[in-house]
Image (cartoon, rainbow, N blue to C red; front, side, top):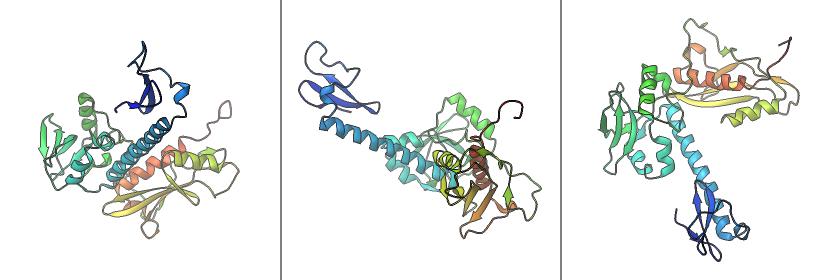
Amino acid sequence: MAWLAAGEGYEIALVEGRVAARSVTGRSAGRQLKTLPKALKDHPEVDRLRRLSAWLDRHAAACVAQVDGWMVSSLPVPTELLVRVWRDEAWRSALRDLAVVGDDPDEVGFLRDATDSGELKVVDLDGETVRLSPRTVTLPHPVLLPDLDDVRDFAAELGLVQQVEQIHRATWHKPAGLAAHATEVRDYAGGVFPTRFSLAARATGLGYRVSGGYATCKVRDTGRGTEAAVWIGEPYYEEQTTTGSLTWHDEDGRAVRLAEVGPVAWSEGMRMAAALHAGRTIEEGGNA
């Protein structure tokens, strides 16, 4: 970002997300200062840059959240849209190095660039850079990727870093032999928290929605919307609480039998339940 005049003898700019200053006079002219001079702390241009920095942070977070939403819902994303947003650094950072699938569902590649001509440059699993121009692409959830371990190993060889957790996302596969009418999982039930508020705060801090007595996450799986929910206790309950069972519901709020839960919805629901349970109070000592 260009340096802007601010007061007598100083210029300011955003450097790595914070307001930095440099002197334009004297022996230190042109050298970035370690701290912001007192004379600039209440300067209107400094305030403007701080507000811009906060907006950029929110924008970057929103881009990551949107891309994550596309991935967990397996939604087809127009290639033209990716090309248009690629010019934005925040969007580019959220999308770069994600695994994408075009017209051939068996051909996975890592997104490296989007050109003005409407093509996507991807590195396929043979290490070749290829150009794709499908009408839409999907950002597959890792539970849907065959040979996921091989994909992870290849990404490590390339040194790829994903801003959106995709190929290294924790996954759970639905076990066989589930009871025909079962509708809940209790693998992560019973995690003790000092208060319901602390459990709800953990849920929101992890990015999950708290509604009534539940922490929830929505997924679009096998062509339909599904919401996973973990019981966290009655609202405003101030005593010690524990995590409850994990259930899934359809778009009309009806309970979904476990045998009918899709692979992405199962994995994301179990991921949420495990993440909540991991923050439980751990007993120490002889009674642990």
